[in-house]
Image (cartoon, rainbow, N blue to C red; front, side, top):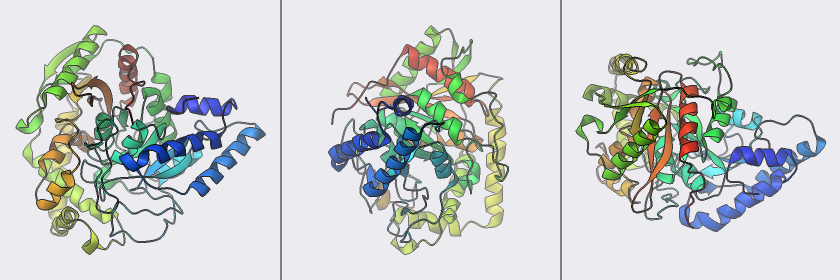
Length: 463
């Protein structure tokens, strides 16, 4: 069997066609075969992973009810604590020693039956859009090893695209699920603010947990096992009317789809990214939807306010030796220390007002927004060098990659990147669908309709 998608792998395990240990060994063999070129996985404990897989296999042998993803391996991004594992945040400044407890999303993955297997690479503390750091080096895009897989969940996306795992844990505070999904030809679903519980909601709840996958069905089914509500959390999205996986293939109806063909804030748009969104718009029109080109205004003050919350989010990381962090992180830390409480509160108020104006267009002007996922193609490896050369500045590459994504983290709306296009040079190019508040169900229906009409899951890079 081919363990490249999660739901079929879980079904094969339940049917005893393959054991959890056999699936894990197949995944680890792919890590051994490709990781020296891709650098997606930066830590693993094969002995413990295999022990966990054997325990999962024993549960299958005993019979009885199994969790939805029982025995399926999944790596965890190196920003997210796993009890007993090191959590380095991609940084030499991180404290030594294992984490004491799981982050809530890790507990949800365990309850869903996943076998946790390895750590994936990330930029230091995650605020940039390429998976490069000084501690582990750069991750590389399996479609072109000279290019980045994106970030911050770039190691996760590279691992899935390379065939190491059927899916990978990821998180997204400004595009960090959708950006690497686009770069690597995957599906990246960013949930709504408050959809997936967390101990602390970074960046005023803009940062959310999820996965990168090959299929819409896998993304929907994982969201079903990660979602709340959790009465102890500050933010809780309302529960869906039925499981998200039931939305896959469900009737969509006729939707009004707004299309962005220009980048906000006057930024240039790569012709391949424009071609991708125009291709997707034609596909939606062919499916019977009402498609119209629209514009989206992003005031400059909202960008400044968002950056204030991002920099202040460094407070999420305890016991860091900031003197050992990279130049841009030290610069961001200095900026965060200079933000007084009044400035921070004003920044949050600015973002709240922006969100009301922006999110109010859904249901009034259109039902779903279609955008390019990125304004540029995956950049060459080495963006970190340019960032270190001007650590106080907002890097243009990072900005161009996050431009269509980050402001929907601010509004808290769900978005999904789909690998609808391939460039003339053979690179995946994603498009993003953005739903109204809490409308993951609608996004899953529409995304699965596009997937059925224009399938992509069998596209694989050659490594």
